[in-house]
Length: 568
Image (cartoon, rainbow, N blue to C red):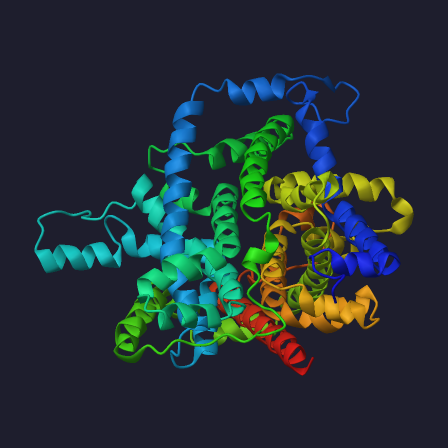
């Protein structure tokens, strides 16, 4: 053991097996991210407007970047976007961190039930969730505004709450982000060894001092990851801006990218401009993760799961359990109680006939089957790749290739689905002998390209694992693959399960890539949960059934992964 003291020791002890794993990680990442990234770079320097990058009339130009940087509303757009993103991320962190701590670190009853309940809003379509809030806040007919006018006896016929402004958009997006941030923080806190916190309290430090000087520094990689990923999810999503910002005077980068990809004539005339915006965002992403790499360059400082202790200790809440439970109940009522009530009420307009119409509709059942195959398959493929990449990046020596691999894994976060869809379409048409275009296998492979969020989760969790258990396995003669399967993977079960959930949920919701790749069979993301001409409430019933399918699959996979981790 004297020769195996660094995080890279495992890769040095068995170079041949480690080389195979490293090669597998690189190849897998290139196949999933390299293809759309190359098209993104190529398209950003091709013009003119209205011509596809590969058409004969296209030529190399810097006009796309010049147009993006010289837009007349660029400064107001950057200002409003900074307020929108920063406010939403801060709100999500303020709500999600206490929830994650209660679920993973406190003795609150039924922590697994709390985990599931907090996760529920993430499984609902964003349009359903945000649309329900908008329904309660409609200026004239919204239930909340009507109730407030009656309660306060106001002589007005609209308001008093105006939902169409930037602060309301920040609130809505912050609540939408909370389940995502919670998932990242829950995995981080689950792997945190409580011995150091107990030592701090035994030395006389207060709970606040312990949290500031011990807990927060140790979970910094996970918190930083959650904040950055929440920021880029906010930039990528247009649901809240479209619903709450349609009448607000807010200029957001979301609208600029969406407008470039969706011109009025439904052509690809803005493909190059959208690619330029995406690459500018990628440059900022590189700066942020450069800061992340610098602050976490000594990975052993963040290792909280070691060979000496790999179990977390739950804090006793005592009398604080009452306000903690009140906080949880208030969050759950706002996040899924009110939207869930509206959804279920809509599905029961004609009794259970809407549910029966969906369950007896062959198209809906086919959509469930196709979505299950492609989402489970892509989630499994993507999770294997991100765990391999995270293991190689964290356990290897520092170097340019490792930094490049880290940035490549994160790059998919700024590749719009339309760009990725076109990239895989062109790749499949060039490799016609593989018969991937229009096939379930091709869609399953392409849907795994969103590796950025799961990779950052796996990377942050890997930094929490001390290297001595892997080093002991390697010193005992176990090959790297065996060590990865029998030691690392079980210890990463929380992060693996959450990474898989991200892949799975995004794949179920996806429709853009499915359409571009010529898959004409029904899927959930393409809206096949709706029965055309069915009884009232059929659409809501389809959404409820889809939610139950997603939730059941996630609970099953999470149980299997944690059971496998305990048995190992």
